[in-house]
Length: 455
Image 1: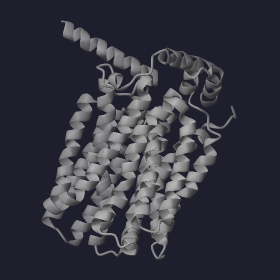
Image 2 (image 1 turned 30 degrees about the vertical axis):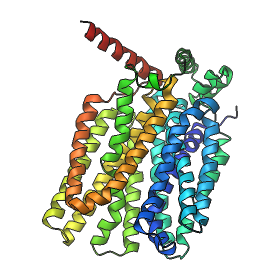
Image 3 (image 1 turned 90 degrees about the vertical axis):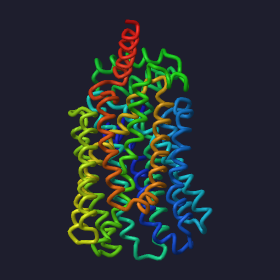
Image 4 (image 1 turned 135 degrees about the vertical axis):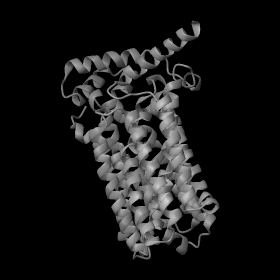
């Protein structure tokens, strides 16, 4: 195995997140120009934006099969190739249908990385920095979103600007492709295919030569590897149920608390103040910058504060921001004060989201599932996240026209507080535990439940 630094492993391992964030965000600026040049109606615009989500769902669901068959590294290489094809195809698309198909291809790359990277980073990182390393994926997503906002602003004045906005993603895809050849395979996958010496070498590298930690990790991995690979039946068994509720619950709530819709609506709120398109795009860059800063804060906190506590605080802050925003819009709609307070509340909302639900969802998805069904579990949770994203994206405009902006925000605010209750009551805590200890906790929980039933 080529020796590479831990920083290189974690940065390149998470680089797929940058592509994921960039592709999701770049279309929000590009669509303003695509609709005019390709003469798209509103229905076609909706499909261009959400076609990535269709591909992402397919990519996430297909990942489990290949994850356990070919390993994490090979899949990362394939994902970077799919990304590059989708990005270049979108940038050069001559008409609507080509754009639609290439955006779906791009989405498959997004789906693969969203299911693969959190699990891959968890399997490489030492237990004490699990949360921080897994949060690097979300940090890369936020950097990708910020990069998209900056390039949207940069190319705004060019006639072919949208082609540059979409096609630019091929560059980081190429960097990921090259970097993937230097990344190690997951030690858990290496043990699974009988390459124990290689697994030990990877663990010695990531644990900085701590032999006791490596021996302990290998012992835990061996115990888990003895288990037969599970299928759907095992995934929905009573043993895995708490992990499934946590993984799927996080995936669904991350979307239905309105995060993406509120963020995408940001430029519209800014234009209400009377700013032009360019100024609104600049303000969007401001929100993107805050996103990156608070994600760094989340990385620093991740292994020191319980996951559940962070999620509850995050959803509470988001809910209160939405209620204040709804109140000011209801009583002072159209006024300058309303627009400014909305902009501040929106920034606070995004900060709470980027610091808690945005990263922790992917941390939980990567670590709650037992090894024998981890591929299947992470794939299902990622696909669920994309389906929830699509449902929110499709219902948001009709909610807006039927209920108005302030009532829509109140609805999302109520969901935030339901989310606090559900998280507190049903999610399992994973901070400071190895993947094997999390699984042992599930077995203990099942034994207690069965003992209770027996009495």
